[in-house]
Amino acid sequence: MNAPSSLDSLVPDVQPREVPDVLIDALKTVFGDRCSTARAVREQHGRDESSFDVPPPAAVVYAESTADVSRLVQLAGQHAVPVIPYGAGSSIEGQLLAVQGGISLDLSRMDQVLSVNPEDLTVTVQPGVTRRQLNDVLKSDGFFFPIDPGADASIGGMASTRASGTNAVRYGTMRENVLALEVVAASGEVIRTGTRAKKSSAGYDLTRLIVGAEGTLGVITEITLRIHPLPEAVSAAICSFPSLDAAVQTTIQTIQLGVPIARCELLDANTVRLVNRHSHTELPESPMLLMEFHGSPTAVKEQAELVQELATDLGGNDFAWATTPEERTRLWTARHNAYFAGVQSIPGARAVTTDVCVPISRLADSLGAAIDDANASGIPYFMVGHVGDGNFHMGYLIDPADPAQREGAERLNQTLVERAIAMGGTCTGEHGIGLHKMRFLATETGEGSVAMMRAIKQALDPKNILNPGKIFSL
Ligand SMILES: Cc1cc2nc3c(=O)[nH]c(=O)nc-3n(C[C@H](O)[C@H](O)[C@H](O)COP(=O)(O)OP(=O)(O)OC[C@H]3O[C@@H](n4cnc5c(N)ncnc54)[C@H](O)[C@@H]3O)c2cc1C
Image (cartoon, rainbow, N blue to C red; front, side, top):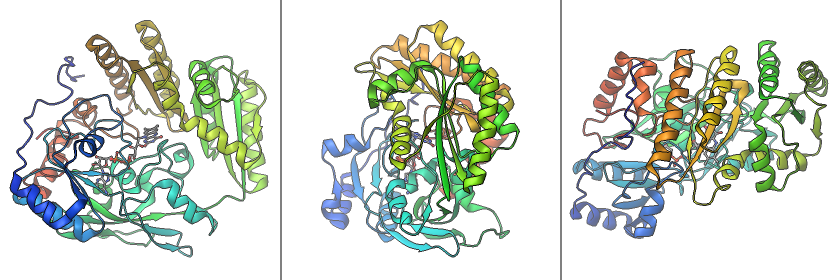
């Protein structure tokens, strides 16, 4: 393992680039009151859910069209000033921070669902559409879009972090669900990638290159997504276990048997307690799997019976079913709020969040070791996992003003990541690299891969204006 042991420089020591007055004047002329230099607006756009503090961008521009995006990128490019695309601001790894200064490009006003194509199971949206907004539109036609990060993130942001969520075990991540993009390149040119066809062998897969690029290669201005018919039957259940290991073993066996479970989420006993307090639920305070099954009524019954049998063999209690849509919504809302339940359990705390993902056969080892290390450290934490995917999050709760606590949490993360990589896994299953995981990228992918990423970045963005200083340093 060659990840550096020093934790001193998680935020690279790079001087912010100068944003000349002439550029701000030009932006105000072009965008009027859609260009703001108000401190509160800049500060709101200069932070995310990470625990880093970095000075805010010099200005925020609200785009309302692809032409706006292209114009802004061209103007910023003339002065080699960074442009940081901003969706809903829910990213966790420092992706939005203006580490080299520059302009925040807010895409939330590009929020139109442009077309729904039920016959082809596709939808085309602007990047500021949020996942909940999209599902409200699709519901009336009998469809849904399954990718559901806990926050009400924007589709542009989700594509850019290659997000997933609780449904990924059955429906895949943004990687599988984005078909085509419209992108504004660093030159300001508007390009298209992919088509609405289900598959294509036409040249390099630029769609997959932009998905997960965290705004470093282009600004996404339109996205065509796969959508899915609302399942005929849905059943959600919780099951408590005598130990975390029993819950994990149930998950591993479920996946290895090929049960097409739609959601399989793990909470440890402490996190269930925090969730109960935060969401006023009365879930049994032991290790717990939250599950959902989709399909025909018969298929759902079969899947549930099989998993129930596996759980019982491992000491799991009877399933408690959430039978009505309202109960299911309450259950999944509580699960989605587990992050806030954790962070808000200690006044003033911030979470150093981990995101490892390992092959399913190594999940028990990876998770067990993470819990042992966290307990030994004395640092308070919460734990939630999209365990059906082998992906789980430890949230180490620290006082952001105490360097020793941050150091301790980062050391736990480093150990966790190194172990996951040694097991054939990744430092980030869904949150992305941002700033926080930059130092693990070469360890995971090898120097040759990072060199290829650098070459792509330098070819597509020679002035390094698109969200510079993220994923890797140049
Ligand atoms: C409580 C909570 C739970 C979460 N749970 C999950 C989870 O289960 N799964 C998961 O994957 N994530 C999760 N996240 C993280 C976060 O929601 C995702 O990373 C999400 O995809 C970010 O979307 P956003 O719209 O907020 O993007 P932002 O935070 O605004 O931006 C994220 C990145 O994308 C870039 N970007 C944004 N829009 C564009 C665009 N149009 N073109 C190019 N680049 C763009 C930004 O520059 C930045 O680098 C969670 C976060 C919170 C706070």
